Amino acid sequence: MSKQSKDQQKLGKFYTFEVTAEKLQTVQQKARSMYFKHFRNAFIFGFCIEFMIIKSRICKFHLFIYIKMKILLEKVHKEDQNQKKKKMIIQIQPIIIHYINETLIIIYISKSMQHFILMTILKIIVLSKFRYHCYTVLYSLLKQFTYEIINILKRVIWGCCYRVQLWNLSNIQRGRVSIWYIQFTKAEFRENIKKQIMQCYNANADGGFVEPFDVLQTFSKNEQGIEFHIKLVKSLAKKPVCHQENIDPLIEPFQPGQLVMKLENYNLLLNKYPVNPYHTLLVPKQFIHQSEKFSKDYLSLAYDVLCAVEGFAFFNSHSEAGASLDHKHVQIVSKLAFQSANILNHVREWWFERSVKQPNKFTRLRYLKKIKHFILFFNQDLLQSKNCDELQQQNLIYETYEKLLNKCKVEDIKDFKHNLIMTQEFMMIVVRKKATYNGVSFNAVCFTGSLLAKNEQECEKLKQARIIEILDNLAEVDESVYSDIDEC
Image (cartoon, rainbow, N blue to C red):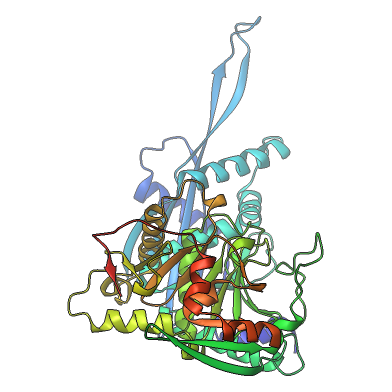
């Protein structure tokens, strides 16, 4: 069976719209009659993409983009006053017409998109020496900014779905385009992520890409009411101290079994040296330095993944905070990790027991008063609402992130050494001073209540030490007195 037929079988249904002279003429007539009555003596061309959404029912969408072109005679005042030069003026008024159950919505394309279309058309005109045709422009536009169109589609159908993922784009032929889409609601999207992670991890955990997750020793210590867990994890002993120069293990080509799935501008990868089962990395496709500030979509997508596995995410900004790679990456572990993350469990329980919840109020851990750290809870009423679309989710999570950075008085994010921990309920930032204590390295995981050792010598050191003292030494000292902050 061919790849195309397999894709068709997976998707179920797809729709191909073929541009014909009659349909183009219809588009032009609609444009003139409905929206462009004031565009006199102008050549108007438009193209249409028609596609289907796979959901509980099949919905058909039609998108039209209209572009007005006008040729004028302009007088050029040079030596010959009678000399005339042809000048083409291209004015773009693209409008997307969105039909859902005979409901019409008009959305104007952004200025940057208009500029892109304009430059594309100018290029076509110059190359063709002013001999242009509907099909030529159509084909070139579709070929050169397919993904810009896809981004528009995402925004247009935002009201009825959570995220649209490009399934396959067939070869674009002259005057014809086929676009297939598979669409998820928020719950379906997260469930799909969960299934992919479980399938990929289970297939690679036994002799595959992932080093086996074996806990050789476990030890518990209770300090100030918190039961800390010390683990000797076999896979960490095989983890290289530093990677070869000029080799980035987080970009393509990936090792067999490493890639879980592609998510827009990010890849979801398995962690080769897991600290818990189903340990994944969310990584930008393009290189971004680990110390760079998070973008809205990055944090929001990390939140989706951690919700999918019902776990938590953690981030190490610099080598002093436990980072081992320069390529930006967020690590996400499943709900199994909560079994030994009693700091996070304590914070969650404290929050759930409160009768009056104030999501905008900062919180600190009472047994870590000496170090600089802040916790801020998400507005769960808004974030978990069925009406919360992706843009709202991005803004809510990013707003929390920004407030925490401001509370830490961050001047330059690139110099801000910290750990970030995010659960479904809250986000926490710990300002770091160094990565090691008594020769043992620690990343953000230690501030969840779990301390990991890679050999017996490290494990013995952790057993002998006071855990609170270790955490105090790893983080920046904070002697400030906060009267407006809760303690948990």
